[in-house]
Length: 140
Image 1 (cartoon, rainbow, N blue to C red):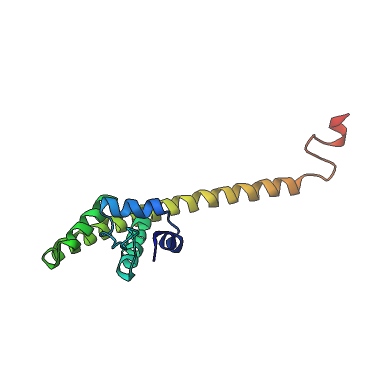
Image 2 (cartoon, one colour):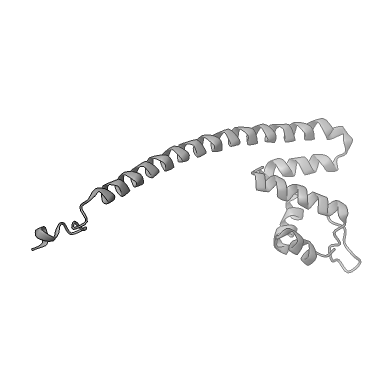
């Protein structure tokens, strides 16, 4: 696949894919004799992995380190595993923070629901002759 096809498939720009390769987020992509990048299935898997990890909030630095270690072979398996385990733990902590924020938002939303119900009850309890501008007699 060429860069335009891959960019379209993943909703990325060609510039983003070039950046991924330039900074080491993905291993170097093979090129045709003409110099055009020729993405194969392995490249596609890397892009899927990087996009997933970035969407989850993993740092570019951690992913570059992971990719660099990957290209160094099996002697780096433990180091790669440790990077992923550390990032996983960071995501778990982030999820806890997000859960706490959601709880706070739920509480605030319930508070506003209560205030809205109170306002509706006040409006319903007004005499029919009363309006926002006061009663008919008050307006004269």
